[in-house]
Amino acid sequence: RPDAEVCAVDASPAALSIARSNARRFALTIEFIEGRWFEPLGARRFEVIAGNPPYVAQSDPHLSAGDLRFETPMLFAISFVVTFILGGLTGFFNATIPVDIYVHNTYWVVGHFHMVLVSSAVSAIYAGLYFWWPKMTGRMLHRGMGRIHFWGTFVLMVLIFALMHLVGLGGMRRHIYTYETPFALPNAVISGGAFLLSGFQLVLVANMVWSLLMGPPAGNDPWGAKTLEWTTASPPPHE
Image (tube, rainbow, N blue to C red; front, side, top):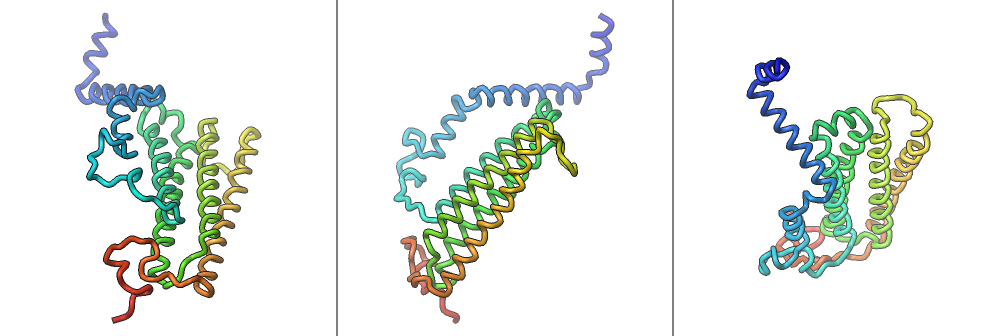
């Protein structure tokens, strides 16, 4: 047919390569939505991460085989993994052109960006802070205040940025100064949650002040790490 001949002439190797790549990405997106992306290789990779014995050598350390203590540093470390995976999965759709045509320049992109670069980064920073504070100061932080800080921070970060994804799917564009009526309530929750999230960071400040003034001595190795850096005094002496 004439139109087929035109298509054959216009379809350069580069254009065909791009078309095949986009079709493959779209197919992977459908497989992910339907759950087929995890079978069989995806499921095995997940089981390796989770520490399933058939796929992990018994000599390899993994999370489920350890003697875990869910202290505040561990909670924030797990929060980093969770939020980074959530943010990464939403980025998978941004890299798929048929989906990105719809979500581009919406609040979906804002939610994805903040879930990765705010939630995961802040969680990792707090995990390190809580872990190394006893070594730096020689005093322990309050366990109860640490848990209040963690749960308030984790829940609110996930709530705020998940709502951003939802309003983005609803069609709300970014870079706007006002909202249409259907988006008023979720944006009010997002704004209120952001202020509340900031308030929970004051718990950390209060905890640090309490620790410096009244915190119990940390000792050389409060976490039972038994590695070289924890054999020195807390804080380490100046040489």
